[in-house]
Length: 274
Image (cartoon, rainbow, N blue to C red):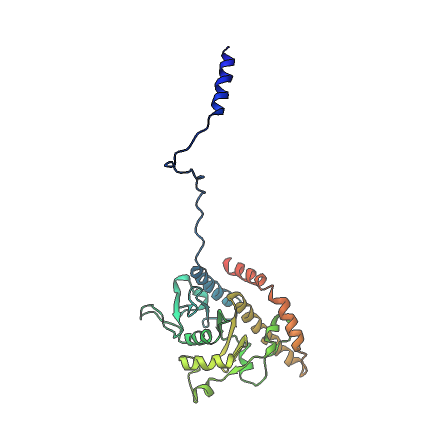
């Protein structure tokens, strides 16, 4: 008897329909566990400036001198570069925002790189460039003063296939200087010498190398120095050196261009282990 009444009660309950009052808000699923925020674009770029300085120091491209910059990902008319400091010692706290006139909001007591105008004027002239390296790589210096052209002789330096111009500051300044690009006018002259090339030598000084991003700029800097070293060795062995022709350089650059992250990860591990 009890069982029969229970069945009747359940059946009646199932036959009922309910209307939810409009004043009762719809329930939402419980919120997912909050994830830590991803680093913003500028913070990542600052970290990359630091890492690039350390990699280039570790690879012998820069020493106590030289500097690296990245175009500000939040404002194309600004760039990120350390205060005046040895590359291997650069930290995130050293990295400052610069505008394309070479100015920074840092206090006047903060010492800036004298040659920040290299970066400012190249960014102004080259919207395709998002990272710049200025170095005094020893193997490059002879090619800026002898009239011997720096040319690609192996596939890793194929990006040099379009030629490497030489900037002569004496001609740009119309007289002797201290060899430093310390004014916007000299920076503009250097940018004009660089043109659309990935690198330019600076007579009696060093070189400037650019890239679409920091990984490419660092890759090019390392292999420009290595190519110069190998080319000097090849020239010492004999007068006839077989360089990459235009088609070889084009094909080799295309094939290596997609592998830049491989050496970057290696170089990154090297400096992180120190």
